[in-house]
Length: 112
Image 1 (cartoon, rainbow, N blue to C red):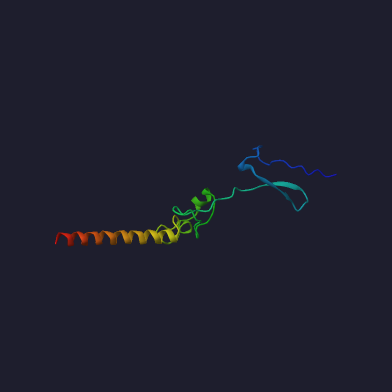
Image 2 (cartoon, rainbow, N blue to C red):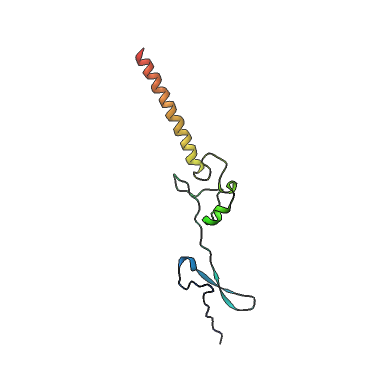
């Protein structure tokens, strides 16, 4: 009879978030524990909280090792805001400026 008992391979002996394992069978037929890496969260838009496309979902330590070109998108607010939110910000800024011009024109006409 074969015992299918396995034990941790590292010193941490508690079932914590950083100590998740799964069973794996080696080519020699032995059962061993394999340590699973933590899953990473996708970078989200700061305004609408949608997942950003073009930015890899990696752990913070790996993100620090990546180059800037990989972590961002070549656009204004690229890597922090999605394209829809950037577009709405640009339109909103344009409309506010237009509103200011209209207010100035009306004020000038009221003086005359």
